[in-house]
Amino acid sequence: MPDIAMLERIAAGSPAGTTLIPWDWRTAPAPDRIADIELLVSDFSVAGPGPELYARMPGLTHVQLCSSGYEGWVRDLPATVGLSTGRGLHGASTAEAALAGVLSLLRRIPDAVAQQQRQIWDPLDVNVLGGRRVTVVGAGDIGRRLRTVLEALGCPVTTVGRSARDGVAPSTDLPELARTTDVLVLAVPLDDSTRGLVDARVLAALPAGAVVANVARGAVVDTDALAAHVSAGRVSAYLDVTDPEPLPAGHPLWTCPQVLITPHTGGGAIDWRERYADLVRDQLDRHARGLPLLHTVGTPG
Image (cartoon, rainbow, N blue to C red; front, side, top):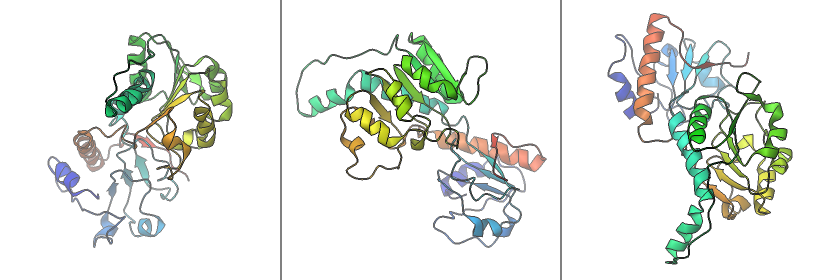
């Protein structure tokens, strides 16, 4: 694992006989015992060590991530190696970020901050969230948390998932659902089925004045189409993620008054490391006892 402080957290309470090896494969040479590694624990990293280093880890059976997203890891991961995400670690924090971003735009907080910096007192006309029709794309932990809070605020909520099931509409319905969506929240993993899911067709279907909040991955949204719609003033957007990430200098989304951007901090609550250490210790215990690991996802091959 690359984080020494995290290693020290995990060491307390790890199963007897466990050897923890500090190694940041992005910046440091391979450790002497690389061939003995059975579990690889990552911090926030968009991709794994790569084929050459994987080949030097014949004993590797599983990789543990601290993020919910894993799209960059599956490309090179050997088919014999399992992959677990940090599902649930960041759900509450990310749901709060989505809610805060939407509320900030509706309540015109960025405009109020700009006035404060210029020492101007000029009451603004603001909007309320209660009663607005919300579509949440993502039926996992984040989506469930958002639905609970939004319904408590008086918002009718539609949840969208990959396929139809009780209480969940299929993603194929999104272009039609967008027509009656005042707030569109994206909280879904990035894969082939969600890449570009919110395209020009979906954005054009949204009512004028709609808010788009992306706390998923930037590539879930067609960036060029979104830039066109916010620049025209049709919709506003809260973006905790972008495509590309970060946006290049001079990109119109940086300066568009209809856009609020945060630097991918949705899941970055201060205490996430303690929760991650607890999860890793649990996974180590399961591995030692021959039990299935938690939060596994499918990999190619």
